[in-house]
Length: 168
Image (cartoon, rainbow, N blue to C red):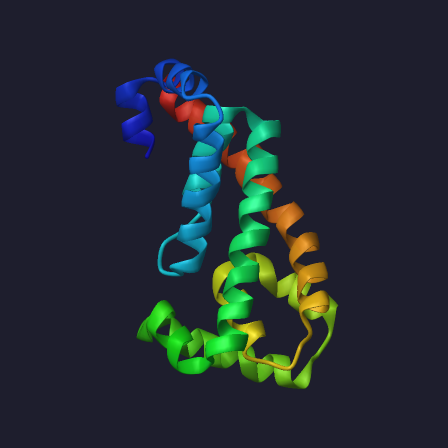
């Protein structure tokens, strides 16, 4: 991503974003949601690029909305379709991590625990929580608290670093 933005030029990319009007933010949110649902992909690089392209404040709002929607979809996919579908979406590699997380959740049903573990990998954690008896309201509260910190970190720190790398 850094190479692509450096090659195109940050200013040209920002002008293209401005010229697309409302479609660019919508497309950005949709891409972030898809990257969260397809757990082996990472939405974090998109959040970082969003900060550089849309401005930090607007990118924070867009990324926050995408994270809440994407992780909520993951939670409900787990609740509705169960482990076999989640295993297909996560892949065998992430299955072991999912199993470890679920075993910890069975012994600790606290919102605080979910909130602290959520920043490690929101997509995988949201699938894991969906496979437990934890209610969506508790999950959502934890997600909102952790998403605020995670998205802020990616947007404000990550995109600032990206802008430095691109300008050099």
